[in-house]
Image (cartoon, rainbow, N blue to C red; front, side):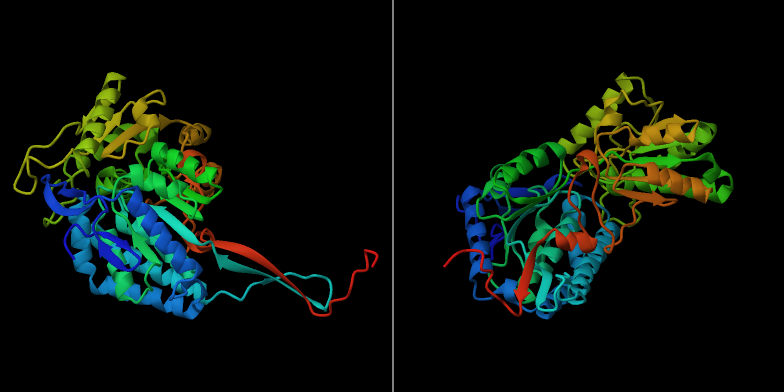
Length: 502
């Protein structure tokens, strides 16, 4: 298989129908990392046709495979992920710019997702019995696979987001076509290879590398696709989702967030509490250089501790070591692309023009032995004195930018945290357990952390309110996204109804 044969259709690796290719750049130095196939609408059509055949009458009969066999395959994939952990983590680090340690964590989280859905599906009962009020009637609701699933994943966590869709889809008995981001497709291609190695029948797993237009749009509108699952930006997700809805498909959309990190003064009453809250605020904002949909990009801190908190936050942010993610000691890597770098610069310029105070960062760092001059690096940035009228507060920046807002009362904190069109995630920091839980209950966000930030559990459901999306991933709800319910009513002693003459 050549480097450009990254389209997998009906069990065969091949190039794009058009022969087009795309260079994948290393964001640390802007040099070519790999060359992949640049698929088009014809490639998407071929992949959907293969998935349709595999679901309807494929030789492997994946939808009719015993649940135990499907679960066993997922567990084999998990084992293969751990076998190749270092290689996959290295590819993820070089492709996305994140640190090698973050790449290892991603592989472990993906492994856990495959094992979780294997355990979930194997431990389910045979259906939900419905009481029909008669001993002569057996009535049960059972789950069946949706059919052909089209999946589009983002560039920031390509392997992780692919697993959140692929693992439950396969556990439920579906076939699929996945289109990874054209910016970071490499580990998704690798994952498809592991599925093949694990013994998945031809046509069940298909991948088309290429741009959202035309590949993603074609998958969204294709009449033979039964479910469309998208994770990415609001604008592109809304456009693709509209095309999918027009075809009466089942849809799942995860569209990002603008996430508050609310810090009450009592959480900082001790030196340990203060240090922990500051450390977690750094983690919330600057993990993966802020390129995280759940990033705590909005610090909302109580006025009485604001000066001390922000001063320490800025001091520590300036010490974050930027560089190539594979280098020892590096804490933050580059942004994913030149386009993303310019976008972050524009947000900072806009904030300063609107009156924000720059406490640290706000620039491209000087080159160093671990930070090539051609890389897409941007210093962790803290912007103080921010307010809701600012563009940097309202929009998802997806970069190493932390904004600071303040409050004096609990009601004001809740109002600020909820004053966003998004509703993906948020956090509350308080030594008062009752207040922390009370505030968490009032926040309109899909995930709330109390005295923590960023952990997720494969058993828990992930999704948002507002413009953060539709549907849920992970947990039992994540499996249900890829299934339909069927009611089977069996009359054990049928009799004529005699409603009609004859």
